[in-house]
Length: 160
Image 1 (cartoon, rainbow, N blue to C red):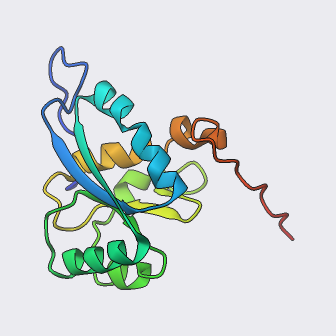
Image 2 (image 1 turned 180 degrees about the vertical axis):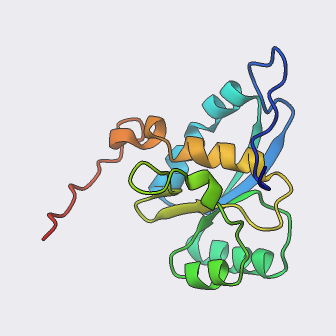
């Protein structure tokens, strides 16, 4: 099994991540603020506790760049800021999520919605739990039509 294998099922456990706490951060945006409103539903469903920091865009970028550059373990999931994505991913500061995005192609899953990609810092000690959160945060349940979040999606641009 890969480094990110799912947590083993616990006999009789309806909440597979009971007792696990993950820490994450995102920059302040409508998406992240509303996502945080629904974290209690995720916690109830999984048993996981999520500490979720929202920070102003420039503050988030500075703190995250320092955390990633030092390969720290303060965060288990982070917003991959578009302006830093080449630096952060190219340096290997985020875990490779390829095996989670299978199957490949249009039926695969990529942890991105609009301008919000989520990733797992390489220093995270709770990668499986962080992946569970990312799957939920960017699931159809949470993003489908954005009706839950009061965000109206823009129509897709016609392809030429």
